[in-house]
Length: 289
Image 1 (cartoon, rainbow, N blue to C red):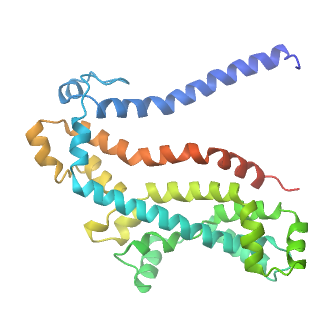
Image 2: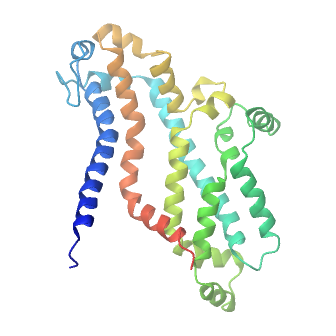
Image 3: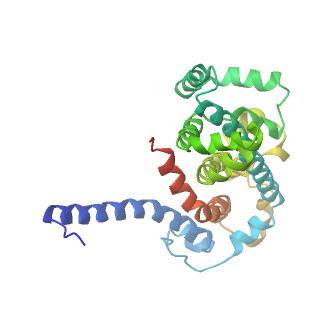
């Protein structure tokens, strides 16, 4: 084992302290939210809640669970996230793979157009007019189709495909594989890391998005969870929660924190299962041999 110099030891200590401060800055607000969601209304109103619950109670979550509007919005978010991520992966891979192959003519011009969309995004009004002309307004497709491909994710996936050995592609073609069979049997099995990485990126974007729903969705039954959360946190529109609040004398702040935890928990539970693919995909996609 190589012995560290005094300068390297100082840097290591400084690095640990710096990363610990950053980690605490991210974790403490989340712990405070969880603590408030599990505290009584008296403790919250008195300002006694820090990072640990005071006068522990499940009442805030009981109210959230019994609110059908929250569950309806939760189901909509799950549909948009799962369906949207599936469309994203298919669309991005379908464009990234041919852009990584030297035999496809015109790929440089397509890359240039993708780069232009990465630098200059379309304004809101043209986007709205396009969605309306496609007949997607007030449907969940309006939350999926316009964001089918991210230029940033496209370049990462293309970089990954560039690092795949050309010998595998050539051997597949020699064995008689067509393009679709080649992609399905050879390319995609080797692309699990980058597909998991892009899937995580896309799913987080879909799960946290609310502006698209505000622009394109008019029916409240189609609102995703983040829009319902925005109503609760910003405008205090509790809906069915007001009835339970008046009966149980529950703090509005506690209910807000409970909804925030419910909205954040799914992504936090999914990430540990994709972490190894996430790190591997980012490293492989960033190296060009």
